[in-house]
Length: 444
Image 1 (cartoon, rainbow, N blue to C red):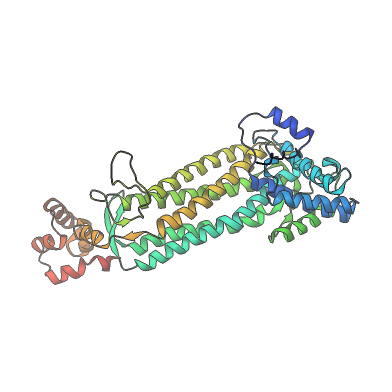
Image 2 (cartoon, helix red, strand yellow; image 1 turned 135 degrees about the vertical axis):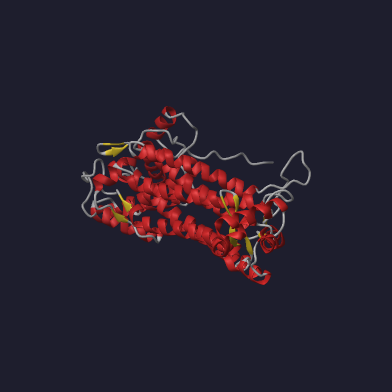
């Protein structure tokens, strides 16, 4: 006989219940990463308040224990407040305060108050911007940068493997001068390297926290040493360096750093879409396209055409990039909504920023392991196309001039013959000299 399911206790309290009633808009709660970061802040704040503000040690310890449970995802189903809520994120802050208070009360056996104890020395106006920064810092440091490093390593490995493989370069999607496949891939690698550099450079700014500024940046109702102690504890909990912002008025009234981070993610999305589009073109065919590379055959590409296989991973990642670009536009609009002493679109900024980080991390991982690593060059196909490329005549400019070169290229294209053969007929340059001058490898 199956035992009856035990109903879980409701951990949130009055303010969360009101928010659930008032904000029935999207049905989408704040990301769990955001809630976990906010819980880490609550744990750090409790320790700092015990040190400096007279918070009872027993209460502080149980708040820390409860907050750490929340940060580890043990109560994720207790956080359901809609993203589209009050612009300060007060409802999510109270949701976290109330759940932690309920858990701590249950452990301690005496009341722990969500405002007086869990939210002591804090305001939604400083902890929500801080949670945006903490969650973004964790996602960038622990997930996105490592994913990018793996992608760059995979591209570099292919670049080395195909450093001698010559192919037709293309500008305007038209045949251009030769290039090695390794050189082409090195361009992708440099784009990814720049993305990593941008993210590393922004970390000191995104890890500076509004915590301690409370309502408007003046630090009302908090101890002067609270922020420094809380950031020190937060650094110990995460293994990353967090510091109080050097100007709370900027940290609370604006979200410029979040917009900056989103801008870097937008640039990364642009880079990734260029790489994905190159992969799709190079893989096109197999008979009537470029067919320069072969991507791994992962699944059937058509429900009606048997045997058709599509470049599904580059397509999926390109859609990720489009979504991230859209998120950035929303973050840009939200970032300018700092009305006097408070930005009032904080939940939207937090949601979109973390969504971008998650999508990019997962998309990059798929691109690395399901596209770049198994990618193979079709060397014979590239060599065949290269030999017929009339643009090779560019190497003869200094010998025959632009106008004569254009005539040779036109004749080679119309007759569908190798440039070297046509040039031998239309100039008095010895064939061996032509072969040397028109060697595609020498042009790379």
